[in-house]
Amino acid sequence: MPDTPQRYAYVSHCLFNANAKVDEFAPCAGTHPGLLRLLRENHYVIRQMPCPELAFAGLNRFWQVREQYDTPAYRRHCSALVDPIATLIAHDLAGGDAEVVLVGVDGSPSCGVRFTSSGSDWGGRPDKPGDFDSDIVGGKGIFVEILLAKLTERGIAEPRVTAMTTDMPDGDEKTALAEIDAVLVGVS
Amino acid sequence: MKNNDRRSRRIALVADAVLNPRGNQPDLMDLLVEYGWGIVALPPESLGRAAIARWMAGVADQVAEFQRHGMTVVALLDGDESEVIGALERAVMIAPQAAVPTLVVPAPSSDQVANFLRCHEIPDALP
Picture 1 (spheres, each protein chain N blue to C red):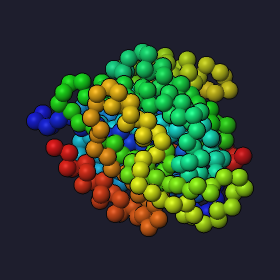
Picture 2 (cartoon, rainbow over the protein chains, first blue to last red):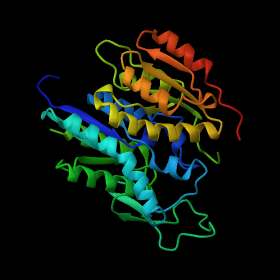
Picture 3 (cartoon, rainbow over the protein chains, first blue to last red):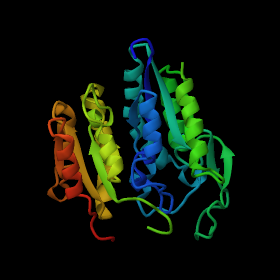
């Protein structure tokens, strides 16, 4: 595609590795086949970001909301992970004729790009038996927030964003992939 | 894992050439999807030594957590990316207990990669 900008998709880790998801939230065996297909069809270079929750809270972590992860230590952890990602984005954009899209996970306390989870009463004894006992609010997850701040520090404009929405109440894969495809196609 | 969780407990560390195949190279991601593997992407060699090392520190933490829970971790590496391979060895494979079965691409054929994945597809017993 010599006449179009090189496109880069920075995808949240679990979209290509469901093994990192918090328990009960893995929608596929490993790599999401539908997302891979869309990225290939639209000629994106794929960059998978690390999972900030996996290394910090482990595979046996409970479901948590954004407020629970919003600690100085978790922010330092995210910042350390984000640093080489921001460097790679700067490297990818250095040629000038390139574009970056961020594919996150809406509803995630870490990787939400438009919506994240919230619950001021979450803490202590795990007493939230329902799948969606937290609130979903507009805003970014902590990892994404820190990534975008690092890009701003480097003078890089906020990339176009889209997200898988299957972790959201009423989220379904077909609708999510259609929305992601529209964003991937729409990058001029 | 509970309820309808569908994770495979199989993870491949993959070189950038696997995630983003060049030219006429086979798309090994199709095999990884077919056999149900998740991936941990390794950085491209062009990122540079310092940033690669920082990236690998995060990879090492993730690998340690997967292995601590008995998940299967392998690596599909690009033989042309010596900086990435060196950084991975220093970060992840330095301890014998953290050894990761490794296949170097793109030299092997798709059949060889498929056989490699099949040989390692059974995760350890659930903890």
